[in-house]
Length: 54
Image (cartoon, rainbow, N blue to C red):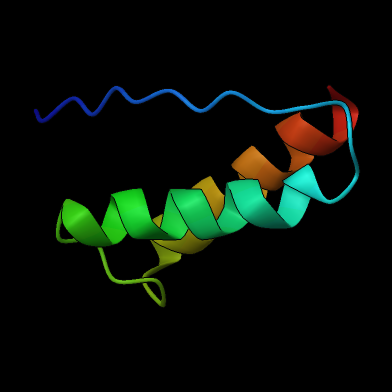
């Protein structure tokens, strides 16, 4: 099993949600996971929800 651990610092600003989604897409692409794969879509949604609720 492959483990991917990365970190992004965000500010308390609603604009950070979009930046976090773009960042997540680029990290996944760098790991060979295409943005249209179901796994990527789920992970990007999870990142978006976490940043929104944070």
